[in-house]
Picture (cartoon, rainbow, N blue to C red):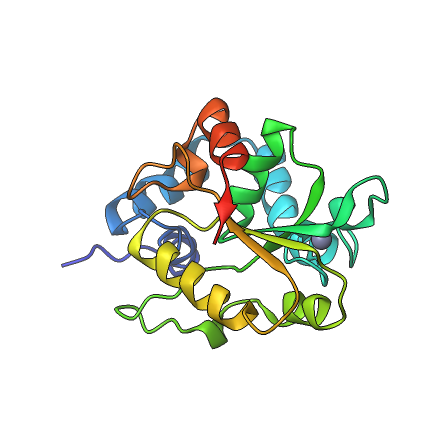
Length: 201
Ligand SMILES: [Zn+2]
């Protein structure tokens, strides 16, 4: 039986409970910590940071990356090769790959992967703007950098099928990617090798 706190605190507990990996007990601990120990100014900073997410941060209309404007810094960078698109599952993967500082093309964030068990199909992924670029002949190479998991592989296969009828080279990063590997957990050297060792897909 859950202890009932005053409604305001219960609301905060509910909010913390929406974070991944945070159960009721942890959410209670966080909420009580905020109430008992956090300074007023820290609480204000915390809530302002949350509130400004909606007003100051957007999803890039072109690639799905996080952005302060409608188009992200990478997509607005004319020194990058816009004809080479590296496709990743998540913004976290994009940031991990970008840290390697080797890739000079642009990205496309799918915002998920196909999962039959979770009922996620290709229609649930962010692919429209990518397909538009391909159909418009704006892309020479698509590098599939989805994770080496069942979902990631399924997604890569699906995209390859989808891209088959267009004049675009499709490659898949492979070398050094462990099976079951999540891109965002890989070290930079492994990622660099995976990128360099990409092959026609
Ligand atoms: Zn972008």
